[in-house]
Length: 173
Image 1: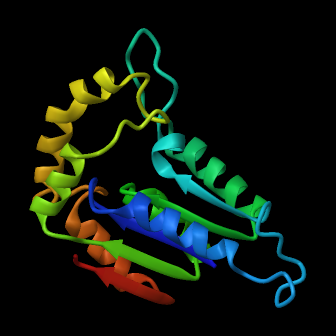
Image 2 (image 1 turned 90 degrees about the vertical axis):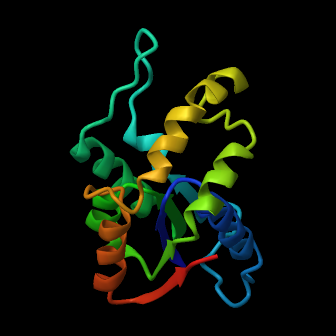
């Protein structure tokens, strides 16, 4: 499986990615002798490659080309993978390698509630306090999903879904 998951922040992308990753663990090496579920599978959260390390407390978005290079390296290294994020342009540039696309599109209230109740994400924030300090901005940003006309909005994600030629799922819960 080579899956891509796109949607608003708080939609449930990371949770689905982890579930798909666990499902890959159950693949029998008898049925697929070249597949080692311990080494041939991985998840890539696009937040990890879309941003440079903070400098003087300020984060900077990495260049599209640098991020895409990292995605291509990741896809070449693993036999099975799950890539998830809200970065429509990155998903679009790499989705020809995917076998399945998931568009997580629950109601806005669900996304906002999940953001409010999200556990500390140490891969994104140095401390829980740092994450909490960013919450108000995140909630404002999430609330604009329907109105955004950039790569992060519902319209862009919907176009990706419509254009994807392979197996796809539009999840609205």
